[in-house]
Amino acid sequence: MEQERLNAGTPAAAPKKKRRWLGTVIAVALVAGLGALAWSLTHKPAAAQAGGPPGPGGPGGPGGGARRGGQNTTTVGVATVVHADIPIYVDALGTVTPSAVVTVVPQVSGVLTKVPFQEGQMVKTGQLLATIEPRPFELALMQAQAQLQKDEAQLDAANVTLKRYQTLLQQDSIARQDVDTQAATVKQLQGAVLGDQASIGTARLNLGWTRITAPVAGRVGLRSVDVGNLVSSGTTTGITTITELAPIDVEFAIPQDRIPQLQARIAAGAALAVSAMDRTRTGVLDTGVFLSLNNQSDTQTGTVRAKARFANAKNTLFPSQFVNVRILLDTLKDVVVVPVTALRHGPNGDFAYVLNDDRTVSQVAVTQGTATADTAQITKGLEAGERVITEGGDRLKDGAKVSLPGDAASGPRRGASGAASGASGARHRRDAASEGGASAPADGASGPRRHRASEAQS
Figure (cartoon, helix red, strand yellow):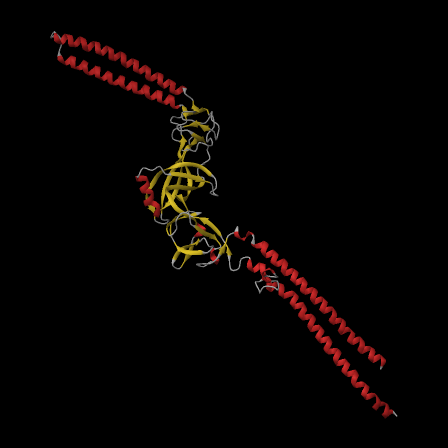
């Protein structure tokens, strides 16, 4: 009986194995279908945005608007070629040097009695700076005047005697030798009087030097001697120093390659304007004129020293200050000018992209002249009124299609509508997929449930 029960159970085992195999196939197919659906939902919108084929809705369907809104175009910046004046500058680094630095040294020896100036103050020419004790020099002047009076009195007496001798000589009452001797005495006394006058002048000069005054106008430095000290003309430090600040000079070096042009302008009698700027080259401290050029070049630096003079009315320039110097050599009048960003450099030379009316560009070879930091002169290749590409030119070729910022204003709206259509299409596909996907799992789930029910019945 055990063998009969085993034989009876064998036909029932085969249907069970068949149902298990069928359930496994359905489950694998269900997983594969769900994976394919997930891939399509995540990759198809990105392909549409990248310029893929139009969606089911045609040009207005998903992805169609973004492709139509500016395919194969580059947004560029443009500028118009104009006529303008180009200034030619020479920039250099300069040092402010005062036009005069004077050490105030006493001319006579004596005791310093007054020092009325304040250290660092501005003084004028002839202003009193110090006083030396004047009484010794006043006495020396009086002594010289007394000697002059004595010698003048002797000269007058000698002149009277000479006239008397000359009268007697005419009467033949005196020897000629006596007359000549008296005439020599008169000349001797005249020399003494002249020497006395010179002594008086020296005494007056020494007395005047007891008042030490400013020889130039400028700023007074620190005082090196105080009241009560004995000063003399042999001192080297002096009492103080005066630095002339107005006018003031700036020394700088010019590249020797610019010397011919500079000399040509000087020979023509041009007054070259010079600007002294701060270290950032943004603020102008003062403006002046070119003053002089050195007579030789520096072989180590290849430059020539030059000097410019500034009025310095506001005292913005200080001695030994470093400034940036800019010389206006010349001005090119009414030349063709473009921004420097419009120029491109290729193996065949300089060129520029010209914007055509049909929104295409043409590569034009140009010849560059004088250039500044922002603009460049074009001597050949362009004319005023043409429009050149200033931004985005690195991505262009001859004949390329471009768009301007104003032209692309409506592009984002079309792209947005296309994106919206694509989004709606994606939502439609997701809804359809969800409907189909929901039914499949249900069917798939029913299969296993039926299979488990059959097993339970058996």
